[in-house]
Image 1 (tube, rainbow, N blue to C red):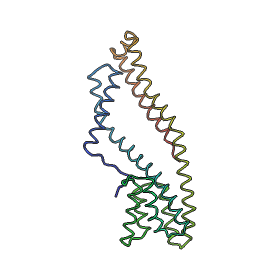
Image 2: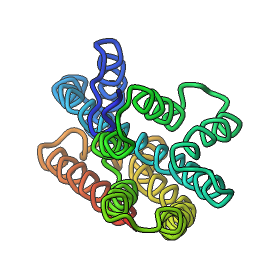
Image 3: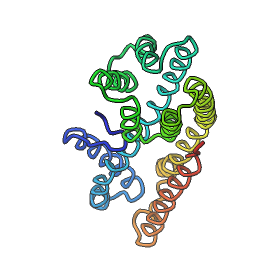
Image 4: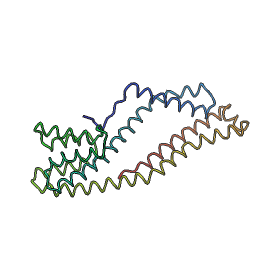
Length: 247
């Protein structure tokens, strides 16, 4: 089963991302230095890009799984409120989720099918959910599984606990989605502002080549451009951290 905390790129995928990053780095460096040699010397930095892309892919998969988990909770609460057992609620949830997610390879469908298969092999629901929680690495899922296991061991009102816990977790996920939606515009503005210095250099180079010539031809000019690239990278990193709000 999928471990959502890790992602291993294939050789072809890694080569694709590395090649794309190399092209972007070369083009940006050429804009700042107007030197093929210096631009080529910076392209090996593209070897680090797959590592950053892997983090983005892991975060994206977890985000998608978290949203699908919210729908699973809604289905479980509906079934439990109708009087079904928790095990029966998971079987019914598979039918409900299949309507919401027609793709059979959707994360939540795969996980629910795996849980049901383990139940048919006489494993406990607690074990199956705990394994899912460890592989997912989601705080909301960890909280749900912890409460579920404690309630199972202590003999509490499982149906009521599931409803209350699911309601709290679902509200939290919805708030996170709303915050993410509100930040979408700011993230777009961040991308525009990060690209703007490059566009300004291109514009000045096209409209005032004599004015920009010393920047590309002298050591002081290239030093200035190097500092500019460093500041641009720092601005990108800081803006990414500012827009990465956890709920």
